[in-house]
Image (tube, rainbow, N blue to C red; front, side, top):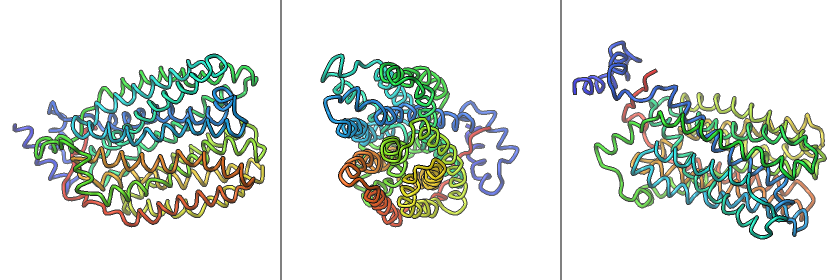
Amino acid sequence: MAVAARRGQCRGARRAHPRPKECAAVAESGTNAGPSRRTILTASLVGTSIEWYDYYIFGTAAALVFGTLFYPQFSPAAGTIAAFGTFAMGFIARPLGAALFGHFGDRLGRKSMLVITLVITGGATFCIGLLPTYGAIGLGAPLLLVGLRLLQGLAVGGEWGGAVLIATEHAEPRQRAFYGSFAQFGVPIGVLTSNLAFLAVSGMPDDSFTTWGWRIPFLLSIVLIVVGILVRARLQDTHDFAEVKQREGVSKMPFGELVRTQPRNLVLSCLASIAPPATGYMVIVYMLNYGTQAAGFSRPTLLTLILLSTLVWIVAIVFAAVAADRYGAKKIYVLGALTAVIWPFPMFALVDTGNWVAAGIAFFVAAIVQGIMSGAQGGLFTELFDARFRYSGISIAYQMGGMIGGALTPIVATSLYAATGSSGPLALYLTALCAVTLVTVLGLRTRTALTAAKPAPAD
């Protein structure tokens, strides 16, 4: 009890003096001092990186081979649309996963949900690598592919919210965006590693690549999952969740309480989440198809440019997160949404030149646009909802935006180009989606983050 009381005093002391010596000793002496900062950030980063690697290799395969292997009865364009439709099934499942895992994450804790989602996503990804194609078992092949994609989407739907909260709810209020950015790194790192995996096999002869080479990135997932589970096993649940259990008790129906008490923020945050995935999936998924067929780029060239752009994306997240903690997460997110509205037309104009330097500039600026919003998003969304239903709130908002912005974008873009033969309608569509985000984020109402101090994790 004495140790606990001294910890309470130290939390108050940290408001005026950063990490006084006495408090550091208390943090080290207690058995419940909690995971270290390194453990928290590593678990958030590694876990989300693996989850998004699993998720994005499906998108890459959908653009490159799934149309031919699983939908050969269609024309090339229709087969590509069908493959992107299967890709979109994961987005349809993501809000369901957000509601499911958000419910249990708000009732049972953040950590357990993070381990479960990792196992489900990795298992489904590994099984996709073993799937027979349409030529082997007919209609059963695309049906199995859709089923496994739904499992991926269900698990990923619960991943992001838990990964953000396990970081931000361990952070001081003025460090929430920075801590939350480590979960956001998982997206570009997942893109980077998935593209590296496909780049490694993309130089194979076409027959070998379509027969077995595409399976390798999926089968590698099993090794990554083991690593992720070992890292996340060291986590403990957050102070915010423990405080809810102690003071108020967990909500019996988090989603119902969320809808009843904060419907405005829920709807607006869903719409405010559209622009980042819309911009991202236009580049990392659709551009693999558009760039090879319409702009004349080779597959390895596009994969390399997208790979390099993810490095820019990561750097942009860091700077945006630091700026969000200093100037306010909402202001930085608005800035990112504004740039997202402006960039689609110049981006397509640069890609249409067929010049790899121009295309690289297009992708790099798009990565900065995404990074600005991603760096602020974790901190912003944590401030929107009460801790009793926060896992449900941020998960549903993020995944609904992902479904609207990510699932539909490759399908609509493919259809628009097939109908018009021009990139103008594609750019207009992306601009319109990003404009929705710009308008709705302005209406978000954040909670006062400084009303309660949060404990700093031990180093």
